[in-house]
Length: 105
Image (cartoon, rainbow, N blue to C red; front, side, top):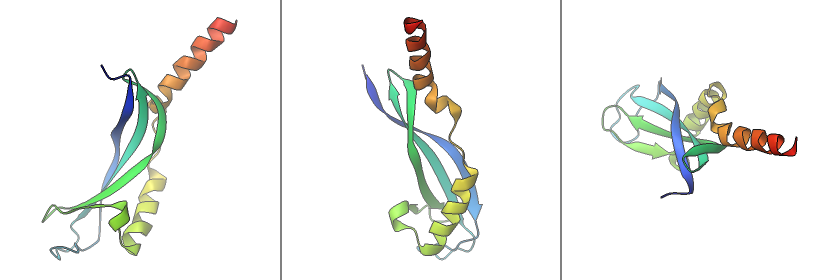
């Protein structure tokens, strides 16, 4: 049984007008942004950050943030601003706060 761990959920997937560095296909890059969160007993507890990656729709090459070009970093920042952290990733903290509030009162 897993007591605690890290999970991720898809926040946004968006195509951008970039050419693939590997195969050279035009306008074939898809950005994907995941929200990482800590969980305790399967309950999302606390969001940890956003994790981006790109994938070429032609050759399927996947790049992580460390491998992004300057243009990709700029596009990532624009897409990241539109990607909000889901409220349910705080559900463990909310439940713990409600429990403590009930115990104190």
